[in-house]
Length: 161
Picture 1: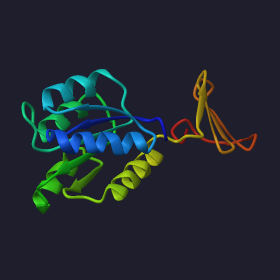
Picture 2 (picture 1 turned 45 degrees about the horizontal axis):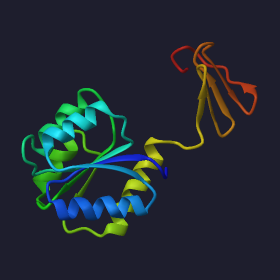
Picture 3 (picture 1 turned 180 degrees about the horizontal axis):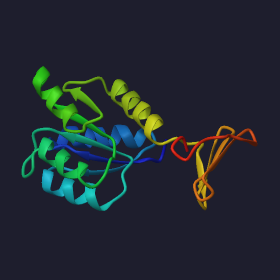
């Protein structure tokens, strides 16, 4: 998870810089921008493991940016906003956000939320080689459509596979 590439899209330059420093100190590779247009450009052209996205942005707002990103990628997104209204959280989550953090927030909690989301979306121990996926004793061969648990063939239908 460490060295995962993150994108921060936050219009407040002070908070943007603080988040960048915090996440770099935590071992992440971080890109930063302060407006929705640049966020869209970066988010759709580079492979990020997670995006921190402010709601209120110049150019394209955070909700619109999220909708546009979801058309082409499923990168995990944590929305960040000063608005704590329930409707705002529901709107963000219903449009594809994976988590929602209200300002002001505890930075330790934010880092832990990022790490938890990355654990769920980026399994570290899974390896893929030529269509073969291996993880904790489970091997799946996508080309042969076969699966093994601790070297034992699993009998399954094509739909189960």
